[in-house]
Length: 75
Image 1: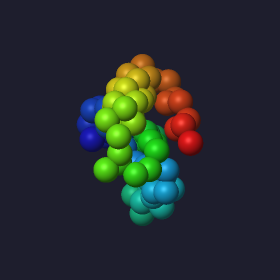
Image 2: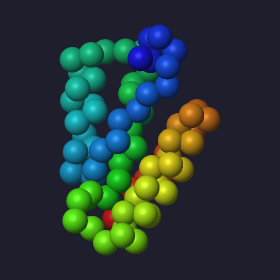
Image 3: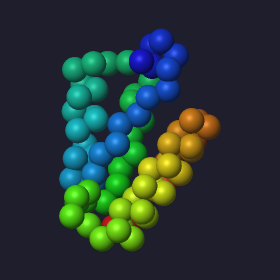
Image 4: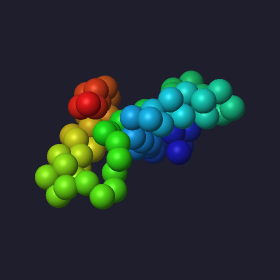
């Protein structure tokens, strides 16, 4: 997607954040795939936590689309 000029990024939880780096070793590119990392787990959480993570993802996606780095995930 990136080679075609389409913005793309991965959304992962904290325990899996390093998977992008591992995958990119097999698929080298000029520009690494950006990732949004959120807290873990993503299921069976309270509505408030789910809403916070949704806001975090939306904010991070906006930052990435503006060529900025997403903020670090909250613990």
